Image (tube, rainbow, N blue to C red; front, side, top):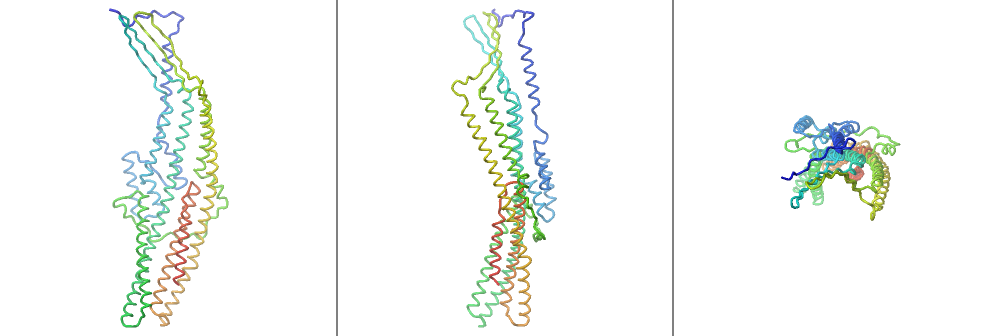
Length: 485
């Protein structure tokens, strides 16, 4: 019987066996691969720190059933009391499922980071050939040394990507907090407006009923009756719009809070917080935004990362594929063959000039985007601050001028009505006018607190500036109220 593999001759005393070298390589691979492990918090600690420093709130990544139970208990505890702005933001940061889904991006990015730190698996192949009585067995062991050479650089790239993911999720968290605060302001203001719209509708209903009775006995002209009926029809329409706005505002807040079922029956306070006595004075707000805005910092870091990636492209310009292999061939008809194989790509046709040019263009693109991010941040923070100051001025004007003036007029009309100098319809018309002024004041106060939330967000990241449009609507409402006088 012909043996499968001939007995190898005894090695010479000075001959070097390749086995210890490959054992050392395998040991080094296990050592380096073991260093790449997942962190205990999954990279969530920076988000917790940002939430505490910038929002004064807690965040929790729900990664188990126990985490979900803890969040549910905290939400129920906060919902047991009337929901203020801070508790609404806290519930959204804990319970919003979209934000929880974004937290999973950290896990995905960390998995890529850990994977980039792992050494590639070695390759092994075996071939068995037979020709007549001759049998030949080839064994080949290979290891990708090119991957090992760029392993530190690849880890740096994935580390920067992981940091970028952390910044992106942090920005989403801050944006959710700002939108929730604005939604809470809108919901409370909508409740107030709905209550005042119901008062206007009741006053108009009383006027229309009285006009109908007086017209029936001949003490009211058709023109006067039509006017009162028109006031009543407009009041009914305004009430329907206020009800629709109240439902929309409350449901928007409900979605941001992540509530459903009986949780949607949460209670809101009856009125918005009072207007501050003085607005915040921030002359250095642009410089503050440059140091605090996460999107500006992210754009700068992205430009730096792209520059390092350009360096990586130049390092690997001539060495794209480098493999080391160990080969051992045996045959029953010939002595054993041993050796090694190294493969390298020869840059004969493609010298990677196009790839380097592309990397340089991407780098310049990131530089320009970083500059544009800084320009946008300065403009947005100026716009947010001017909107904040304008909203404060408008709300103060309603609080100190328009509403007090409407009240004085109402008091004078009551005295005139008691003295029988004016009739009940003039008194009802004045009541409608005063309620409209108060309602416009509520909208102005709402616009101020929305502008405050926009300003806070503008100092941390890109805001959605809705305060200016709200101020315009309040101004229009004030114009309508003045026309009612």
